[in-house]
Amino acid sequence: APFRVASGFSQDELRDHRRERSRFPAYMNQFLEVYADQINELSSSTLSDRLDHLFMEEVETVNDDFLTSYLQFDRLLKDILATYNAAAFPLLGKPSVQSSASLLRQIGPNKAASPKLLKSIPYLEALLESLTTGDPQDIEGKVDRIIWEYVSSFNGFFGSHQVYAYALQLMIVQRRTVLRQGSGKERLQELIANIKKISREPKTVQL
Image (cartoon, rainbow, N blue to C red; front, side, top):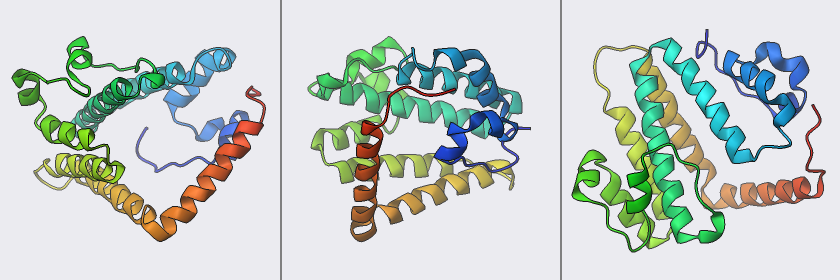
């Protein structure tokens, strides 16, 4: 059953996915069965969207209100950020979002979100104010605060949703620790080195 065992896959495991597939959740195996022959033809954003769709289908089978609500919240938050960044930086191209078209029209620099939209998304006004600053640290902090407050809003008896919420908050704390100036600079240099290495490798994926 999904989500009962914590999983993390290294790049080597993913490259050697044929031997590792017994460890993959059902939605990843389904993705590989359907799209294995199209990985080199479809864009990374298209592949990501289709993998997300299969993931959400599997989440729905778990029938967990917290997981379903959180992932819908997470999708909307990412859509808002992608829409704003695409409007601010046209070179990024049109974002691939799953939210309504009205969101695309109202999000971006020098655009005003309607009172109705601001009311429907309580954190939107504060997030847009942060985005207009262009300060990555301020934006990152605001996004983390929005996620933290959202997962903290689920009350009730102790159950799986408290475990999921704690795990998400722990991931935020861990990431903020990594992003501190000292260790963050070292990590950034490592990421840049990896990007340079990948850029020199062949762009095709062997399946």
